Length: 294
Image 1 (tube, rainbow, N blue to C red):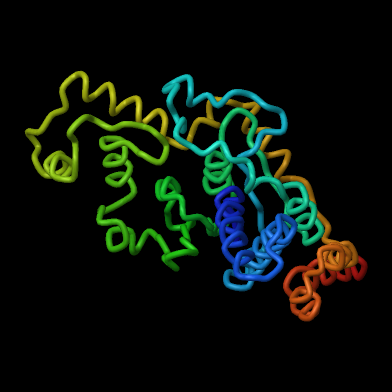
Image 2: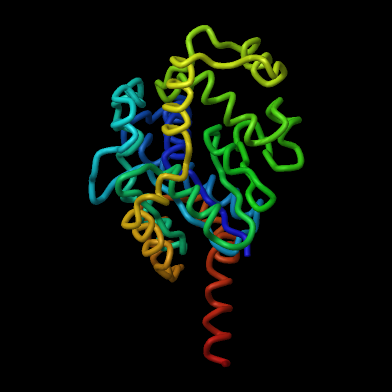
């Protein structure tokens, strides 16, 4: 059993900016064209990942809360992710993308109190079989194991248990996570221990006599609390929320999928509709025939 986990927000941000760039190269550069390109590039990316990894199940994880509750990590550090852009443009096609993915048999999963990263952690740790995470987000390195691979589609890099040191420079996940908590993460607006750079990290790992002082230990422990993707364990309702969503069976509809492609004039998909049918719809048809036969 192989599960493909797509970091939805990460993907739609990348495809949105690609859509803007590509649209500017055409004669009819309009907001509608950017939107159309955005949806197409997202679907095309999903198709390429499914073709590459041939999963039994694909889930699209969103950092979006339907039943909104405040992010509990902000209770630990109010500045957490305070540096993120407030531009909502990359999200303007979310609902359409979800609907088309659903027609392809791909379920969208949402957090309640936590974040998309926590859902990914839940799937990686609680579900059987191999898992592949598609994201450029290095926070997922803490999930790499014998059953979980992180794939960076931009750099075409695989992060696996057997190549972890080669790819990251740290001997294992634990050492990488420790270094992250010592130095912080600028992308999440989480500061590390002041003046604690690569040399200090190296000394921390190599010198048994190197000990953090009280203030440094406080910062380290705070960062462990922020970065660790195990908070769902202490939130039974959150955990059940993930479980219930993942239990939903999504039946793909080739007819509905083609209707969307016609509506948005996805000529390249329509020209190769048989390939898309074989990739996303044949398995469901085969399973239905098996059910009838049994």
